Image 1 (tube, rainbow, N blue to C red):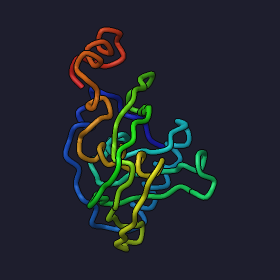
Image 2: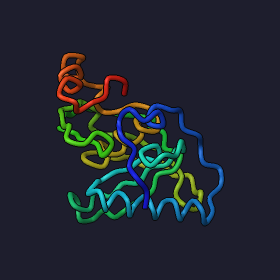
Image 3: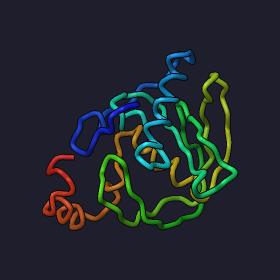
Image 4: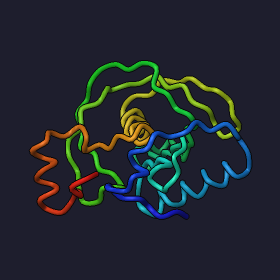
Amino acid sequence: MYKIRFAGDPVLRRETRPIEQFDDSLNKMIQNMIVTMHREDGIGLAAPQVGYSLKLCVVDISSIDEKEHPRAFINPEIVDSWGEDTVEEGCLSIPDVRDDVTRPEGIRLVYHDERGNRLEESYDGWMARVLQHEIDHLNGILFVDYLPSFKIQALQQKGLLPQKF
């Protein structure tokens, strides 16, 4: 299991590196990230949130959609999007903060699985939202970056966000 990094930790703002080795150490990291995500009651977790500047995230929305299961998305890239939806979001790296974020309703994603197979799939609803949130982490973006400055200042004044995050 890993320790969650919180807003203010520089790793959350760094550019991530693509994964090139699809081996046992990657599979072990994926499993540890899934265990960490479940321990923290999350539905998504990106490698920077556990201190690694790698293009890797795990998602498990089975609590919302029983057909789903824990999955890893390696080197994910959104190649198309459509629609618009506003939903309240939160983040394991910013505890006690939730707010509405507007994102595309659906996405087309290119990524690799744990074996290195390149896949291209479309997602909508919760899976699209969680993937966009986690892919933002891979690009140094936090969900609060979508909020207006007056909300960020209010969160900082309440001590819920550091002055530099």
